[in-house]
Image (cartoon, rainbow, N blue to C red; front, side, top):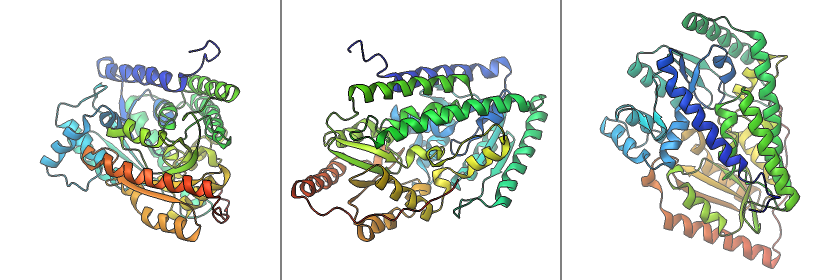
Length: 429
């Protein structure tokens, strides 16, 4: 690589090193007598738990790693042998199968939890998932019940409800660890978090450029990992400072993620982790760049004005918990997609519906009809699964993807009338 391209690969390679270091520290926690907490990515309260010295485990991260490393299939089959239905979330079955197969993930053996924190943010399956883990590990379970985002503005009662639960959790953590909650450290960690979030938004919004220097779906899944697993740490902030330098360098040298950019799309839904590379290549061959995606907001809608605020530590954390994509109702989600299509000058919408994730798949068929028929937006609807490799048909997916972009290419060539303008609604955090 040319000397002037000194930062290319930073976003992906650095996060890989950081996550490796994170798991190494995690695996050493039991031998050192240090506590371990399990929690979920969406609406997670990492800074609060790390205040007490907890090492953090995210079962979704383990599941997607198993998918990428192609071990998820066997774990899912093991869970089904134990009686779990084929319709149950692939992430859950991966985790249950992993537990009953020696608990050795592709990253290494997972330590048992000192505390399970079910930060229920948009996915009801989370509750039953952590109830099963609590029974297996005989560990205490704390339910952080996050109200669904129903309206344009957060109800003050909902905000008070979540902050009240956080105070209860603080008391429990003090009891379990023997440590007092350090509010000054908490504020300092949130200040680092807010800075990292600002860099992440800059990276996401760089895709407004034509051509885009960044793919907000296929690349974002790597770039977003530190913000969801290492948030509040100095390492996390350093990562996003470095990742932004990579994007700045791409802008300066005209580097893009797909060579020649031919089509700009917004993507709805998670990726199929066991076939991630093959799936990406189906779009790359058409010069497709995802300029915005909903999956990159599953851990927080930072580009919609959501920020952690050290001046309002618990309140801003509660607002963050309520403002994750899968915790928004379908109307708010569709309005977000409409804004992305307009603001990022996208040519079409791609909906990847995954069989076992109801948090995403419920309502997607209706969303397709709304965008296709009411708004006149070219919309591709394809199906597989985020964890189960059995539901990925490469030939079928390739045929549908090829047909869609052939149609878009013809539309551009013939100068077909553009889609009707989309009404854009303002949604406040």
